[in-house]
Image (cartoon, rainbow, N blue to C red):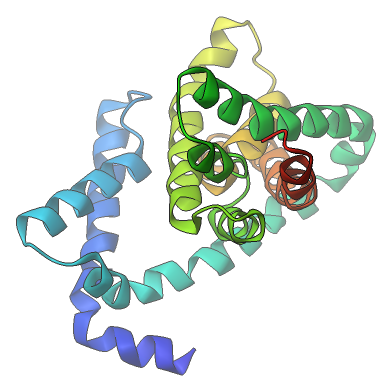
Length: 234
């Protein structure tokens, strides 16, 4: 880890710029309060625009922003706090949680590649899309295992999380579903860490179910996607 931090020192401004971009996006989202203004999406777009405008290679940015990337691990682990505080309620809903998890994990692994194939997309893209419901590091690891491009898997995982963070609440509201548990589990299963962060920000109970969804979906994806790939389903 010391090598990671020392290697990031020359470009520490990238890490600071990333944090400032997210803080600005967070303030804008709180001010405007529109589902489409997701702080993660806004920060990503701001950083991308800065790199393009400054002609900065991504490799240089990745080295400088390494401390921010490293914090993804502790942030994911921190989702266990609301989970631990709501274990009793989760235990009572265990059957519903497992059914929802199975449905969500299978749908995420199969639906995307099938729709892509129906639209004429390549098999390589379909394989990279299959593990998108898992957190980004796990999606990349699963992609390597099944012969897909890890970078593409990361893009699909992040994009899926942003879409869920933006659309989950309005969609569930349109369906008449207001239960925090349903929102949290849906956000965690379909949107991984980004969706879970949205759930945690909205309600502690939703955050607990989102954390559970993130963890169990990661395990299910690591087991299910390679099996589906071996069978030629994805």
